[in-house]
Structures are given as structure tokens and as C-alpha cells.
Length: 249
Length: 329
Image 1 (cartoon, rainbow over the protein chains, first blue to last red):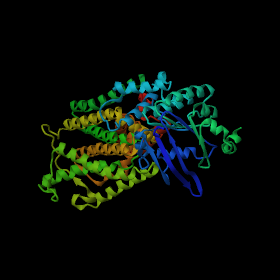
Image 2: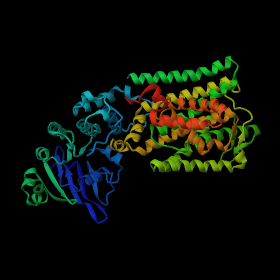
Image 3: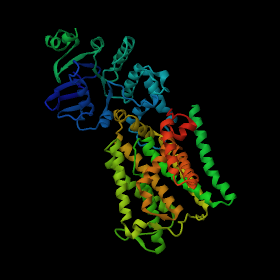
Image 4: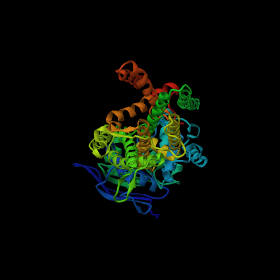
């Protein structure tokens, strides 16, 4: 079996008596989409927060491509290869779509303290940003301010910002949130192609999309992984049905 | 695109007016107005400095008078020491006084930058109203330090009897002194435009708009903010150095909290985060002070009303009124 790209082992986070994340271990292997499902409040977003570094963990290790990134800052983890998208779009609203993408490209290459070279006349940077925008279907919206993009377009741009980092792994927190049927279908196709660029940890409520895309599924309930396996195994698991799928059906 | 061009036209008109006014005043033999233009250029420069932190970086510093005053005191101490033939300090290295403006400017910016690294490293860990209060607190500490420093005038301040020299020109000529101030203002504006168009500017803008997105893009907000804060302080200190030479005097009032407020007013009145906003703001402020102040002592009442109007009805300040909404395209 191929070496996992991302490996989290025994991650724990408590808020007082509440275990938001309880000894969670999982890994993401090359080329796969690993879906993380669970009812509201199961700790899915907390887990993403712990992996990306926004939330300080109590215990556990995170390894990315064999490197221990547990002690790195949020920005350093992003540079190391965590491409994250947010449940609620988090973008520079006054900036254009392209400027949001260009920032991620600059961040990846560590070009923060460039004081002289003008971004808007950097043909290579612009070309790279346009290529990313084309990938996520925003090729003709590059000069539009984010504030003027539709909700669906912002979801695409979120994904574009993660893609622009050239990540080793994608951590996508409900990329389908708030999308209509057409948008979900388009994004499902996009994610299906993206997995070959870098594997994906997908947190998603849309079960159709999850079962269509995922190679493996982990089920999180009360901060614990109560089941993991192929979509077929998860469908068949009695424990998972009881804890989660039963409620939904 | 049309709006960007319109702002460039307004900027050009504003700077041309500021550059031409002293020439006309010189022809009419009115040196007072030349000095007035120098005052505008210098205060605008202080505002250009603050604009980098407050306008572009969203760091509402209520302590920039400290940097303005540091620039002033470096000028005063260097000049007075030079005149007396003494030394500023003897240990660990002997530093003599000087009357050379380029040296004074460089030292003023360096000292302010060092102080800003210290103040910024502490205060940038806080946000919003706490940041405002911590920068104010630091500025007040430096203010009280200056008032209780008898070697350099204490509360009475420090007169600079002879204006400092710039190699090759006669700085006592009001028009030449104005030209020096104006060139430095143009350089600071050019530098700001250049920086804000570069990678650093993009990162600084995102540090204000959405620090979470910035970090997620692999860039830590803190060093970006700190660098902008330090640059901002250095530019404001340069303005302070010129201000001391313009007035032939430096005193603690240069770093009072009211002064910090004034510099903020230039930026807000002119247009937060607009390249020439501080120029428009400082010009209006000084003109009101002189012409309205000639009519009534209560001129600041009218300044207050104008500021209220600008904040309520023209979010982009004067530049917003003249050149339309800001665009980052």
C-alpha cells in the first residue's frame, strides 16, 4: 500500500468536559477521496481546525508527506502543503477573484516581502492565476470583485485558492454547502478530477456526492471515529446506520 | 478603469497645486505662504506614513505622534549638539552632533523604526480598540519621557537656532526648503504606490481584509503587519525631522496625543487607504487652521463638522468625493 500523504494519529481536543475530538486517527492516501461524515456537532470542523492549526490540540501528531507538522503555524502548514477550503467562504471581498488566487500563489512561493516587482505586470503570475481560475470554472470572472460573485462562484473560488497553493492534500470543509443541484453536480465532477492532483479529505453533508466520490469514508460521532471503510462497508455497517444514517433516512 | 484614471488625475492635480503654490508665492514675494506649503507637505508626509499602517494595513495607530516627535528630537539633539560642539553620547561609541539633513533624516528614520519594532511587536498582538489604546499608551510614555528630560529642554523643548544644511543648497531659502520637503513627499508617495502594487502590498491588503485567508494562503499576518508598521513609523519620523527644521523648534507638544489625532484626521479626512488622501487631508486641515483660524478661535468646531460630514456621507474621504470609490483592480 502507498504511503499515506496525511496521517493524523490520536488527535484529541477537549473543551472542559466535552471531548470535541477524541483520539481520532485517520490517513489520506495518494489519489483518494477520504470523506468524513457525521451528524452536526460531531466535531468535523474541529478536526479540520486541528489539522490546519487554527485550534491548538491537546494531544496527537500530524504528519504530512512524512514530515511532522504538529508544531507548525497555520501559514507554515499551508506552505507545507495543506490546501484548505472553508465551510463559509473566507475570501478578500474587495479584491478580484484573480487577486485572491495570486496571493495563494505568492504564499506558496514565499514571495511575501517583494516590495518592488509589480504584481499586475507579472505575466507569469497572472498566467498561473488564470490557469487556476479556468480549472475551477471562473475563467471569465477573474477581474470581478469577490463581493460581486455569486455564492456558488465563491465556493469555486475557495477551491481555487486551495488549488493555487499546489497542495499535497486538500482539506475541504463542506465545499457543496448552499449549492443547488446543478452546482453540486459540477463541483462533484471537479473534485473527481482534483484527486489526481492531490488526495482530498472531504467533509460533506451531501450524501449523494459523498457516496459517489469517496474511496473511503470515516464516520465521526461525538468526536470519535465509530466506523471507517469503503462506501459499501459504511452503508452496511449497523453501528453507522444506528448512529447516523438511520437518523437521516 | 475609468475610476482609476480619475484618481490619478485628481492626485496629479493635487500635487501640482501643492508644488505650484510656493512658486507663485515666491513671485509675489510672500514667503509666509511658501512656509505654509512646506507645512502642508510635511504634515502630508506624516499622514502618508500613517496611511500605510492605518489605511492599507487597517492598524489604527493612535500613537504616531511618538514617531513624528522622535524625528523632531533627533533633529533637535543633532543640531544643538553640533552647535555646542559636544557629543550626543560617548559610550559605547562616540556620536557627535551634525547639521547635515541627509544624515539626520536617516538617523531619525532608523531610531523610529527601532522603536516601532518594539512597540509593534507588543501592540500588534492585540486587535481593535486594544491596539488603539496600547499605541496611545506607548506614545504617552515617550511624551512624558521627553517632558522630563532636562538635558534636551524638558517641558520647554529645544530651539534649533540654525536650520540644518543640505549639501549644495541654501536651506534657509523657504522655496528651497519647500522643494526638499516636496521631493521627499513625492518619494514617499511613489514608494507607497510601488509597495502596494507589489507582493507585499497584496499581503498587507489581505491582512486587513481577511487575515484568515492570508494565513490559509501560507502567509503569516504578523510579520506583514509589523513590517508595514515599522515602515509607516519611519516615514512619519522623516516628516517630524522636517517639521523641527521648519519651525526651528522641537518640544514635547510634537508628540502629544492631540498630534496623533491630527495625523489620523489627515488620513481620515483625505480618504483612508487612498494614495494622496493624506495630502488632501493635510492641505484642508492647514488651510482651515490658517484661514478659518484667522476669523475665529473656534475653527476646530468647523473642522469637526467637516470631519463628521466626511465620515457620515463620504466614506472615501475627500478623495472619495473627488475621485469616486476606491478600487483594487
